Amino acid sequence: MASIDMHHGQAPDLTIALPKGRLTSEAVALLGQVGLDASAAVGASRDLVTLDHGAGVRFLLAKPFDVPTFVAAGAADLGIVGKDVLMEVEPAVVELLDLGIGRCRMQVAVPEGSGVRGVEEMEAPVRVATRYPRATLAYFQSVGLPAQVVRLDGSIELAPRVGLADAIVDLVQTGRTLEANGLVAISTIAEISGRLIANPVRWKLKYDRIARLISEMRGLVPVRPVRGREG
Image (cartoon, rainbow, N blue to C red; front, side, top):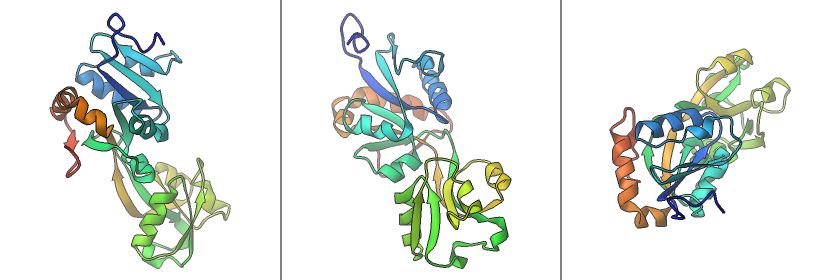
């Protein structure tokens, strides 16, 4: 596979899985700040594998929910992925850094006309539409409110309007989409941002290379360490 080889047949020093979608541009910009050129990932090319020959780094472009799979399986040493995906998938990876990109909130929202202004005012069992069934059930269990999850992959805001659900759980950045669909946020489940993750074995085998990258990223604002998870 020619795309794997670098430096006269040498394997890349690092392989990093990048998420397609809302985090892509910010992740590429962040990598550029530490001297890694992943700009081809946001170019016109449809190639899902790009190379920074000078740095010896290969980039894989994958769907956000697939990034932890590539990293956990060792197809990539590192990955950049949203905290929402990690909460939902709970992959066997090491979460190294809060990169401070793609900031938003995972929130519970209800129809504005419902009169409900807090989760404690909701009647059980509550029907919740979301693309995050595991995180949603864990949250409602934590507040002692039985919930039935309606799994959707898109147009989540539509569910309460057509009677499919009483509430939604989704990512909220500005709140304008909620407002446009007659919804109001009543609770925040988690603050969400992009995270740097590593395959546990590669984290040990390539510690010096990865630790150097982390050190370089730490020099950027607003990169923050993940407490208790960094080795």
